[in-house]
Length: 354
Image (cartoon, rainbow, N blue to C red; front, side):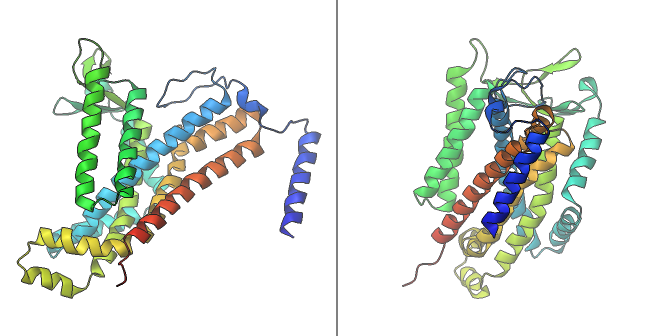
């Protein structure tokens, strides 16, 4: 029955395409797009073919998705720990945060935040943070390494590869984090020393010149609003996952740590978190998958992720079925990869039977 239904759908689609004098297939991917978009991690132009434009959209989606996964996990663990704290004020503040951001739809948060940010002043009225970072209606200006965007992407990929290698090498949690952070910083500094423009420093600091900023890293307001809204929303769910995991740690283990004279920080890092991870990882993996899918709300505020570019490509080329198929297969591959990694990590953290 399933094969018959698929055959009927394909036959009906071919008939309708023929009746509308529309061609099917993927030959359109070699044609130039003729339109521009707001953000790209690599060089692009309006003459790029559809294949390259879709690739840029994929890079943008992966970039935002992995940043949101990292920020959401960090803030979620922090807020979840506060939810588990004995101090009533900290516990109450974390509870209020969770109840507010978890119960407001993500797309509303993104649109609301974007509406606030775009009504900020121009560069001359920008909010300054120590004269090294600035927030205005045009975006966020941050200090950064004096390298090209392509080199910056290469550094991010190398950092991701280092993290995967440490996981495969079964490095302990805190040792692995220290090696990953130190290695990533070392790679970034080395790239900045070797590849920076001649006669310039390692860091590029944004400076106001006339009606715009020069130097530094320019973060478009759409990108900033998208990452911030997804992080605020997702960290509320991760916080509840972390709180539930910490609550499942047997109290006897905590009391044993106290009997040994361990501090609260040591008990948290050496007893509670390692034990809680075994129940945290499975639902946390589901949340990571959701974070990646949540990047599609960028279309509501004009961020050029894969979904946004696919919708524009459909309106320009008319190849609806092909582009939707590519979009579905791409997200299937990304999220299935995250699921495989989560299952592997969960299996690695299981207690060994004696």
